[in-house]
Image (tube, rainbow, N blue to C red; front, side, top):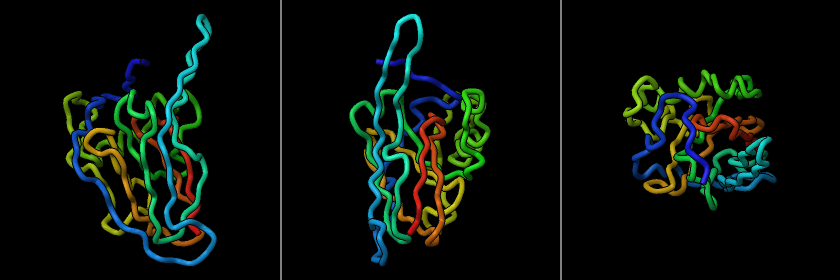
Length: 183
């Protein structure tokens, strides 16, 4: 098993939360599914003396859903070996693209604080496991936490307008990224 990494001072056990299921599917027309199924998967490849390759990611990387539909997020085998995850909407420009950006992820700390976590306190626990403006999952910094124990899956109602592309990432593992096109 791969050791747990801290990318900023948030404890891996930050997600002692219960019941973060939000929204239900609303009928809509078009070619996109009403429910977009996204899964957290994990793999590790090691070449001794050279590298360790972490395959922790969301799959599929690109997907689509109808406006008013639902994103269903679950964890696959090994998904929570490196701790809990967030499913956080961000601006495309906020997605880290290099190792340096991943290790100094500014939006990660901002979203953690929006969840009520103090990034300077390793014992800080989230006070808001779900962050949104009260109008559904549709804009940057809307975010939900999933830990695989208390919260094994999430259902997030997508209220973004048709034609919008939602970019998302895990703020605890910033290389975990993807996008959803709203149809």
